[in-house]
Amino acid sequence: TFTLTPSAGYVTSSVGGTCGGTLNGNSYTTRAITASCTVTAAFASQTYTVTASAGTGGSISPSGSITVSKGSTRQFTVTPSAGYKVSSVGGSCGGTLNGNSYTTNAINGNCTVAAAFAPLTYTVTASAGTGGSISPAGANTVNYGTAKTFTLTPSAGYKVSSVGGTCGGTLNGNSYTTRAITASCTVTAAFTSTTASAYTVTASAAANGTLSPVGTFSVASGTTKSFSVTPNPGYASQYVGTCPGYFGSGTYIAGPITSNCTVSMTFYRVYTITASAGVGGTISPSGSVVVNSGFAKAFTLTPSTGYKVSSVGGTCGGTLSGNTYTTKDVTANCTVTAAFTSTTASTYTVTASAGANGTLSPVGTFSVASGTTKSFSVTPKSGYASKAGGTCPGYFGAGTYFAGPITSNCTVVMTFYSI
Image (tube, rainbow, N blue to C red; front, top):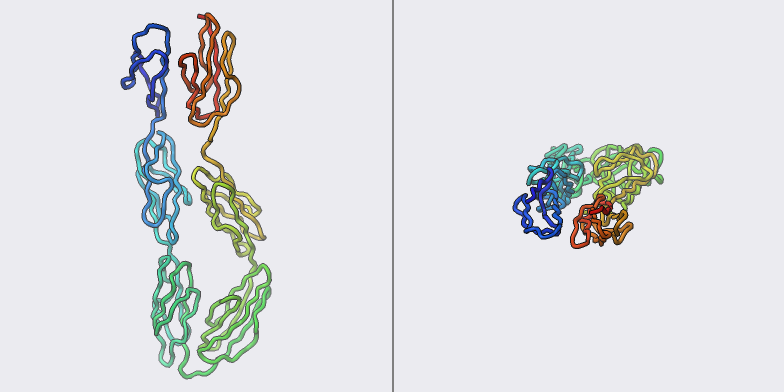
């Protein structure tokens, strides 16, 4: 009878060899011995189950029940759906959230990982020109994909002439409802006098682009006036005048005009970051990304299943934190290139050799698939017996040495001793 004592984090998996016998708990009793024989104990890493789940608004990968070795950690990728963001990752495993990657604490029991998501919110900034008010005014928080309704109230002697801004929407009487909101935007209500007939619009432009026409113009009350906006190559335009209005396809449309006002255009430098990813993952945003001069840009790296982020290169320079890469302040066109590496090895190297007074076949260096075994024929000379050494796990059986399961590069060294 033999007593088997697993190391911390291991359990007895099997007992083999040539003696034969019965395993009961951690005690192994051979059959009646009628010849010299072997008993070989094998142990396996103790495992626990991590149950991963995600709430409404996203997913976690891998999900469901995952087997994890005792004392090890497990990484999960948390992916929000369109219009959502990661709000928290909880559960009983404990761990750390870094960007969209969550790594558990060391696993010492069955536990859970639960990802939670919250709707993305944007700011709709509402304002009104002379002659009335808009309600609610100022900054309004709106969930992604929902619309917002505003009430317009003209002052005495005025009427609603139009509603502009960048949100887009529909005016119905004195009620304005935006389109579904997918980014922060503005709503600007304009009112026109029921008595005035015309106002003065003065248009001008700064360096690094053109505005056409420029000068002073008489514009009928409640109407609009269009201006062509052309930034120089590498520049973008910004409106800084007092006339209400909005951009559209290279044109600034001022109005409805309800008072004397100005159309003033400035231009600022922009650069292009070209972002790309190698095999094993994605980068977001990707392709050509326009960035204001002197500003940094953050990119999210998402490894595919079985991969991890290995490095981020390119000419922009920057810092990698978890799965988020933030460039330096951009002062020229540049590139960001993400690289990924596999987290699982498919094969390992087994090197086999033998001492004097016997043979081991085959000998040399072999590529062995992860988790499999490799067999070696063992033939001692007369009067000698064999003994296995090296770093590969394994066991003897009927003149054969079985090395494995192979989980790392290792060696099989066979020696022979006199009996």
